[in-house]
Image 1 (tube, rainbow, N blue to C red):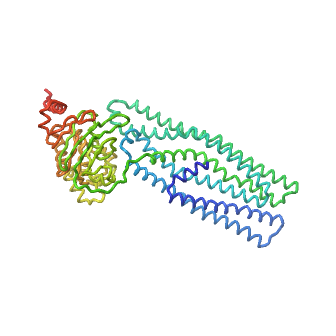
Image 2: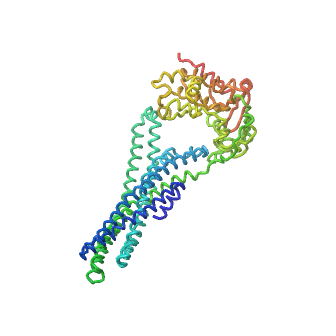
Image 3: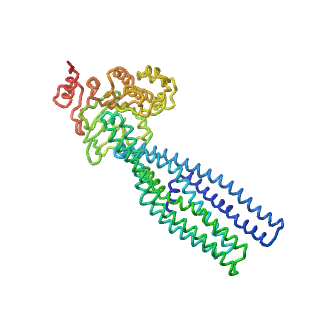
Length: 578
C-alpha cells in the first residue's frame, strides 16, 4: 500500500504534489478535530454519572463538540478543494505532457504502437488518475490517519484498550497485503482489455466504409462485441478479486471492536476501569475502525492505480529524438543527403543514398511501392534520424537544429489529409494560429477552396467532422494546401497529394498546388506523369537506393524503371471503353 502511495505522489508534478501533501496535513488536523468527540463524550458521561450539572462541565462538552464539528467542516472543505484541484490539474497536465512527449518521438514508435494504446492511456488511464486515483489515495490516507489518531488518543484513557486497537490495526494491514496481491493478479488483464477495447472501437469506426463494402459487418461486430465482453469480464474479475480480502478486513475491524467493548466491560466489572472510562471506550469501539473500513475498500484500487501510473510513465520514459539543438535560420534551403542509410526493425529501407536538392527547385521522387520514397522525405524533415550518413539543410546538419526551428522550414501535404473536428477557419489557421480572418480567406482563395467553403451553411465557421469526414477528398486536400500556404514555409513536401482526387477536383487542386509552390523548394512523391515531367530533377528510387537521376528527357531516353513508368502511364491514359 505504501509503495503504491509513494509511486502516485512521485508521479505527480511538484505543484500538485504540494497540494496533496497539504491535503494530508489537513487530514491530520481533520482527524484531530474528529477525535475531540471522544473527550467531549467522556466529560458528558462523567458529568451525568457524577450528577455534576455545573455550567463549567456544560461549556466544556458543548465547546469541544462545536470546535470538533466546525473544525471538521472547514478543514474538509479546504482538503477536498485541494484534492480536486490537484487531481484534475494532474490529469490535464499529464495529458499535455504525454502529447508534448509524443511530438518528439521517432515516427517508428507510431508504426509499432497501436493507436488504441495511446488513446486508452490519454483517456481512460488519465480519467482514472483524476477521479478514482485521487479519491482512493486520499481516502486511504485519511482513513489511516483518522484511525491512528483515535487509537493514540485511546492511550490517554486506558493503554490496555489502546493496545487491543493497535493489534487490530496491525492485523488489518497484514490482511491488506492480501488485498493488494489479489488485485495485482488481474490488474494487468483489466488494463490490457481497456486498451484493446479502445483499439477495436477505433479500428471499427475508422474502417467502417471498408467493413460495409466487403460485407464484414457481422465479423467485425463479433470482434467488437468480444472486446467489450472481455473488458466487462476483467472488470468483474478485478472486483471479485478484491471482495474476499475486503470482506475479511471488515470482519477483523468489527471483531476488534467487539473485543474492545468486551475488554472494557471486563475491566469495569473487575474494578480496574471506572464507568465513565468504560462508556467512553465502548464509544471508541465503534469509532476507531469506522474510517479504517474506507481504507479496506479503496486500497483495492491502489494496485490498479499503480498500473495506471506505470502505463503513463512508460510513454513518458520513451527516448525522444535529440531536439535540443540551436534555433537556426539557414542562409539558404539547399538540401544534401550524404551516404544516408536507415533501417527499421532490422530491415534496411534506405541504402547509401546521396542526393542534392537546390533551393527553389522541384524534385520529383518516383519508383515502385515500398522502395523508400516516403522514407527519404521523412529523413529530410527529420521524422527519423539516419543510422549512417548525414542530412543537411543550408549546410548545417539537421540534428544541429532545434526541432521547432527545423519544422519552420517545411510544409507538408499528404495523400491522407487529417482535419480536426473544428471550424474550417481554424483548420486553415493550424498553419499559423494567430492569423486573422482576412488572411485565412486569402489563403483559401489561393488554395481554390474559397468558393466551396462559402457555399457551406456556416461558411468558414462550418465545423467539419473528425478527420474531415464531412468533406470530399479534393476539398480536404485543398484545405490542407490552404493550411500550408498559411504557414508559408520555404520547403514543400507533397506526398501523393493528388493520388486519390476525382477528375472534377483535379483542376482546382492543381491550381492550388501551383499557388502553394511558387518560389519554393518542392519535393514531390507522385505517380502521375504530368506531375513529374516538368521537375528540375527526377529521382527514381528502388529497394532503398537511387537507381536513376535526371530530367524527364534524359531518363526517358534510358532503359530502366522510369521509362517503364512513363510507358505504363501512357498506356493507361490511352485505354478506352468501347
